[in-house]
Image (cartoon, rainbow, N blue to C red; front, side):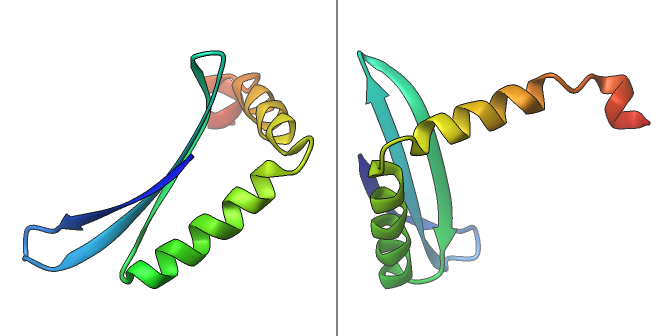
Length: 79
């Protein structure tokens, strides 16, 4: 469900990428990632998000929000 990956920037500094991917029936239904300066902060965020997403109905809230955003047209966004 979640992973923490060590990455390097062009300047040589290190950052940590925390990723969450939830799959149902072979398809990815939710994906989220964030970057952090320290691994401990990334691990804490990952644990907190996983607990929240494990609650019943949490994924349906995100799907409903995605659907609402897609109903906005380019003309609406410009206006």
